[in-house]
Image (cartoon, rainbow, N blue to C red):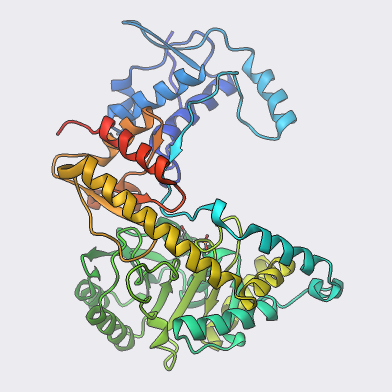
Length: 479
Ligand SMILES: Cc1ncc(COP(=O)(O)O)c(C=O)c1O
């Protein structure tokens, strides 16, 4: 018999849609709502009820067939595999053994080549130096705050090292007292929003943009409104129009150095207009400078915050996720004393303080020049990968895509030529073992989605980058 199945699509872009569908189906099997031998709905009907492309459902079914959950019977349809064990009890056993909820049936999924949105290569991280510094921190009682709690703003050693670094490398006139160490910039974005916005007030964001920032602002109960981005970055005249008609607009979130996801650098003219607009309408700028060190041509552009210290209208947010690894949860925020105090109070309420030994170890890494040395080395490696990927794209995808060579950052924004659909392409690629997110993931409103891919190149070596492009060539949809 054919069952009704419950499929929940979070639509938050954290996972490709086909994987969300596949996970939902596995959950239905685990719960026993789909039993061995049951028929699944047809892909056309399921696609239409979920409002996704049929290829997406095909990709989910294909994935589950490969994993052994489903079997496809020619001209009869797709069925839950009849040789599954009693999955509910097996699942309970699996859960209690491994602590995770995923039932394994024995057949492994095909190896997936994952295109990130711009992660660094963990193989290049200065792990030995960090491990040494961490060991030193752990074995020194003073670095463990002598058994007590530390400052909710973070270890003074790291705040001092970061302040020096920001003064010297980014022209930010900062003292250690104006620095708050956070667990990644994600925490900084949330704290910034709660510190400056009342529930219901509006924050403008770039569109396309960074969905996790929108999630942080929404969690702070702010209203998030998109402003389009063009070849020079955020369209400041559209922002001005929004500021004029929207009295609840209080803040603007930007990624001016390398706009996420388009990689565009906000031009000098636009920067001045943006600063002027912020002053006129008393907007706080949240500047997310997430990959500052990666500038391949010329020197990095100074942050907006380097020009706005006098009126304190900018909250500057940084991260070590791109320089070291996202697994090292350390970011920082720089703001005026009033704003910083509000952020610190909120931080203390949810996370009394950060990880002192880690903070101490990172302070050592900065003081000893290791972080700068690493940045120089990583810049060289990633610039070569960017060039390699650009060449592969030119050679293999030619007329199907256009892109501007990014002056920095860890990703190429690849726009598709007319007639090519990024979701279809992404589903096709998934079936061939390549996970790559379509432009829809970066859209605030699906109607504005760009037909594009953001290809992070830093964590893939040349042979992986070659494979990525080879799969894209093979799976390109027909126009
Ligand atoms: C736009 C943007 N900001 C910030 C970050 C870093 O986030 P976190 O410091 O929380 O790891 C990322 C990482 O992907 C990002 O893309």
